[in-house]
Length: 211
Image 1 (cartoon, rainbow, N blue to C red):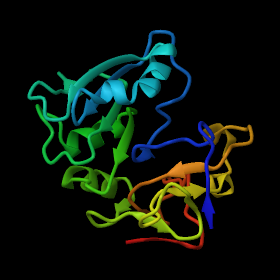
Image 2 (image 1 turned 180 degrees about the vertical axis):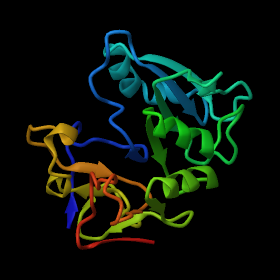
Image 3 (image 1 turned 90 degrees about the vertical axis):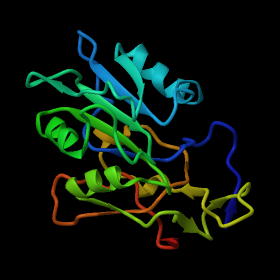
Image 4 (image 1 turned 90 degrees about the horizontal axis):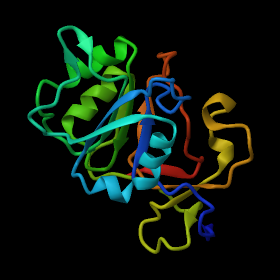
């Protein structure tokens, strides 16, 4: 059924946010050092509310493009950052000495990583997802739901109004207060059911599918 979302009633996501570790937890006193990798630096403005919320909690943000040749996560065996945010879904090659192996080492060493995926996801993020028990659907596909979509979507019904009942029942992650429906548009994912470290934060309804 078609649904109309009131302004501000939904979390409007540019793409699927994939939370690997609790990046958005309470900030430590020294200010967590956070490297933000972007498709282009204009994303600092289009996603300013998100980045401002981190700065308000004393996160120290360093913005760079994902293909910057000076990129580095580890130097002389030490992590240069506490957190890594990757808002560059289509990246095909990271710059500097960052690759899937170094990001996996960063995660294993206690670093937190937040990744934004899209229907144009590149091979490096697919490989990283696989390392962490996540499989992304094929390129150019999207989640579709002909029964739960926003009234503004007159096309393929990829702008989905997701019921908050489909959120993970974990107040520590999703909060304790009642939530409005969530506006979602993104690529489908499948989590490894045998991996106890992977949590499905938001699942599709029985009428949703990926194509």
